Image (cartoon, rainbow, N blue to C red; front, side, top):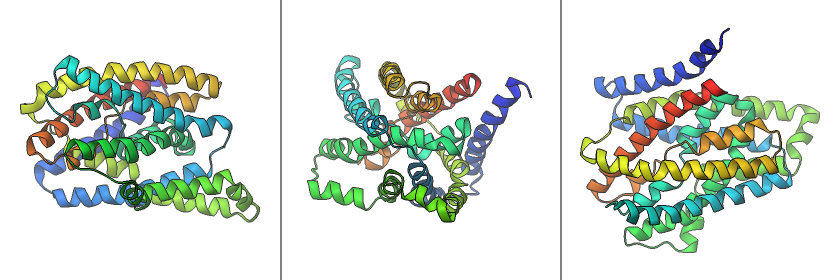
Length: 310
C-alpha cells in the first residue's frame, strides 16, 4: 500500500463523517436536540470509557506524573498571553483571551489521536490532556464566570468536578493503573475483560463526535473578521508552546513517538467547545461559535498534514 493510500485511509473517514454532519443539518434528518443528545452520550458515556481504559493501562513514572503539571502551567501561560494579545490586536470580545488557551481534547482530540496512532496508545494523549482538564475545571471556568459578572466558590468548583463523568473516569483509571490493580487483574483475565468492555463502549466515539462537529460547521459571516484576528492570536502562541513542550517531553520521555504525536495534535486543536454555551450574550455566542468553527477547520487541515507526516 502506498503512503498516499495510507493517508487517505486515515483522513477520508474524518471528511466523510464531517460531510454527513453538514448534510444532516441541511436536510434536517437529525434535529439540534438529536445532536445535543449525541454529544451528551459521547461526553458522559463513550469518552469516559476511553479515559478509563487509557489511564488504567498507562505506565506511571515520574515523567508521567509531572507531565500534567507542566501542561497546566502551559495553559495558564497561554491565558496570560491571551489577555496581552487581546489588547495588542484590539479584539473587542471579553472572551477573546479564553480563545487563546485550552484545547478541545474531549470532543475532538481523542478521536483524531486514535485515528492517527491507534486506540492502544491513547494513554499518551490522556496524560497530556489531564493537565488541561484540571486547568479548564479550575482557573479557566472561574475566570470565565467572573467575566460574566459572577463568582465561583471552592465548593462550587469541587462540585462541578465531582459531577463530571470525565473526572470520575480519570480517577478510576489512575487508581487502577498507578496502584498496580490493573496488572494484577491479569492473573485471572480481568484486564482483558475490562479492556473489551471499555473498547466496545468507546467504539462509536470518533464517528459520533465528527458527525456532531460537521453539524455545527457553519461560521457566522458577521463575526468572520474578529474570528480570523483571534486565530492570528491563538495559532502563533500555540505553535510557540508546542515547540517548548516538544523540548520538555523529549527530555522527559526520550524516544517516545506517541508522546511527541500527542503534543503535536494537542496544540493544533481548537479551544474548548464550551465557550458558546457559557456566553450569555447572543452576540458573544456568535463570535465564539464562529471562531471555534474556523479553528476546527484549521485543525482538520493540520490533521491531514499530520497523517501525511505520521
